[in-house]
Image (cartoon, rainbow, N blue to C red):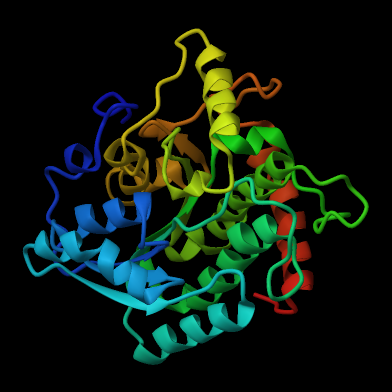
Length: 317
């Protein structure tokens, strides 16, 4: 399953043999970086992509090239979504539910990284609230639009190794805040969401998986100074026997489309993937950059996070 593609594979290589005509895909964060590339690669193979974005005007500019590459009946439409506002999340979901058009794949791509301490509109710590809780409500509300054979792909990160979730203090009310500690919590939450969503929906043929796209320099690093970014890259380059190489954006988006359209559903459902394969489980400190930490795919941890998330958003799924 994993031998054909790897860390250097691109979206076009992964999808080369596929005709996605007639498939509908929701991609959050389709206004920059990985989201735009994901939308382009899918629409170029016939998929109808719904890009959920915070800034519609920015997204229209960013996706102009996507529209020129659509083929085989593919297309792109944009809808407004601010993951840092549950009112916006619910309005987006309600509008899509009202249309009643099903999705074959949802790719939860949008997010923030290493943001300074702050809160979402609803008072949640910014990274946990945006990266996890916003997607938690959106995807659960859209679950009726996922038919048998559909998949959810949640973008996690190797950054999950920085921290497990803290269900006693998710908003850093008593814990010292660090940008990467908060990022780590949110990315662990993304992985755990996939585990529990997959458990809840696999009997009806809907699967979920989490992916690490790799190290890619995109707008995601906008909260980091160049010195901080250089230091992080140096740390990553020093980690692991094979070292580290930054990926291009097409390489970074490859694992998302691989997990969503190419890999066998039973192989990736409830799992964590990287470099177009299912990642091994690895213990270790933050210097061990590859693989997935046990706490990020632990079913009991996933169930506890789900319950806490329902409590926080005031909604039961």
